[in-house]
Length: 280
Image (cartoon, rainbow, N blue to C red; front, side, top):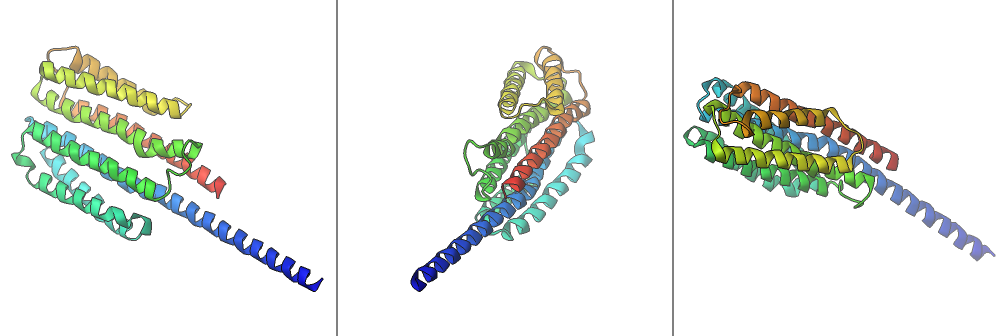
């Protein structure tokens, strides 16, 4: 009888220990995911700052000197984000493997930004775009390493995928249109090739919108802003021979669409965080 009682006590103790260990494991994962959502905002800021630098540089290299001072300010802002982001990755064990990728990005940025005055507009656009593609890949790697893509097919994973891929791709399509359009506006024309490129980007923006609508049921102000931009692309670039919109006006219109997408990103991040809290 005594042996049975001892075995029972041992089993209960083992159950309690395993329960506590599992609870602690879930707590650590919850904290990691919430911290990850916060850290991703820094990565997203790097993305948007480099995108803005691309658009400003496009207008400047195409002859609008009013963008010169803004380029210097934006360069400093990009470098500030790089300086803030590396210590955060270093301090996060799950993200230390991403530090080398970040440093490679920073080296690419420094080479490009220091020699940008000697680049042709197309060279600047291509180098910026390649750099931005790497930033988007870094965001995805960070999200995966922080466990934000766990549970494939769940509402949480769908929202995380929207944060890490769908919204960044939409913002990048808009960012490319902003850069090209600002350059065309500075020249006053885009030609047949330019119209084809803007048509392609407009179509890609619509496809990104559809992907996001499939993941989110509610319609947002972001989509309204994006639709307004699509109207400008059609009426002021694609369907005309002469581009008569001021570079600053178009840059601002496209930026408003991106900022609305950023607000949507924040809303999705908040919803994702709420799911993490409930699961924890």
